[in-house]
Length: 287
Image 1 (cartoon, rainbow, N blue to C red):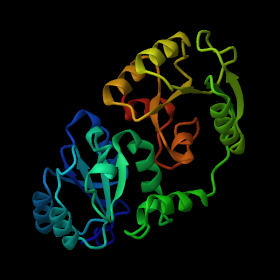
Image 2: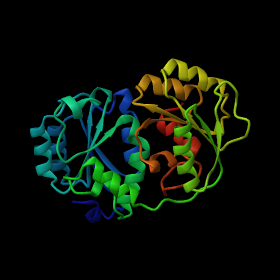
Image 3: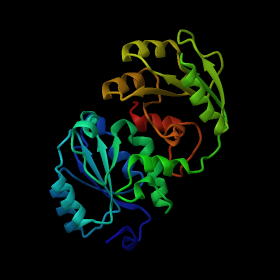
Image 4: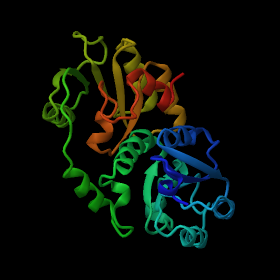
């Protein structure tokens, strides 16, 4: 049975892997907001579960903690049971070098744990609405083709003030241009040693140096509780992410990212199932 035969608008999703790990703690909540989720610790158990429930999933999410956790033959086996299902891999920190030195699976969309929340909600909303999603591109699509497909999308306009905290003029210009393109005003906050002079709706904090150094500078900003504070970093670790969250950040977003993923956290309601900024703090990892 598929979701159509079940008479439900929700997607049927199979999630395989060790979702109890700290870095994967938000995988299931994000999926459960959009579909009926079946979970299994291994691909073999997932295949048996599909047979037992007589279900055909719309989406298979494989949660991989380290390179080689799932062999290619295991992936092929579960694909044979659901050849039309989209395959998405959510990857842990240990998988960051797999594209260079490992053997990544073919035909899977690769998403790291720190990219998951916004990316999942954006793509699931498009899938459920029957619109084109990056996850519905052909299995042979590469990252460059996904970037091109994403660039053709129309984006919604917003409004409000965005405070951009960075010492680098090129970073400010890049972020400001994207904000202006979506209807937001910007202010360049060059000094991390003083709180913002205005009352911004959104604070973008460029964490370009070591975590300890940037965390100290972020705390000096004394970010208001109702301000959406987004930390931009390079491949953060789960412990680093939690430290920024406890210091008042709404989320920590890893570079590179799609613009849609950044603006998903901005005030407003860009997708029907999306929570408001305060709810998203809890969804991403706050208390």
